[in-house]
Length: 199
Image 1 (cartoon, one colour):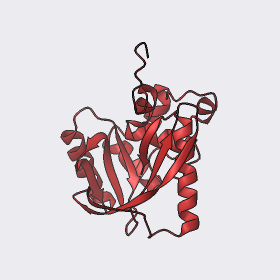
Image 2 (image 1 turned 90 degrees about the horizontal axis):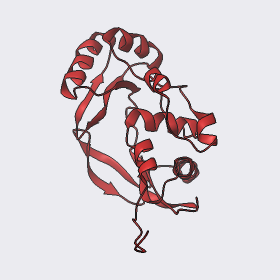
Image 3 (image 1 turned 135 degrees about the vertical axis):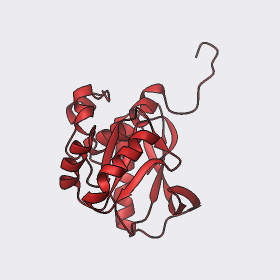
């Protein structure tokens, strides 16, 4: 700013808030974004978000995690099968395993833990046959957010997008409008600035 140069893109606070899969899911459900059942369902920081704070207290964050096989088994009862065991710091197809029934859970949990060492782990219900739709948002430093339609990224290989098609035509227009509203609400909740995508 001293030299009249402005960084285009989200600030550090928004990147920190949304850069973690577990934390971003807690923030999303606290900002009224519909979320599929997961080990952190019901864990919210709504009061903090309403006051402009997206820092998740450590004890709240850990309520969404599974740290042992026993915790994973207990959480899976609530989440339901089939499910995914996911490392919060995973990506690129690493740190993610599909589990169809309880007999597969222990091995999957241990594999994810070994693959992304030190990462917090969570469980998320697998939504078979669903579409991977994304909403593009544009937000300014004054808290104004608009949505720029979206993309269908359902064609994937090993959990990696291969083709991104836009605009998405798989969703009913009324459903996609609700998705756009939820995406804009999430961007506002974290003070996002710039162009981004909500998946």
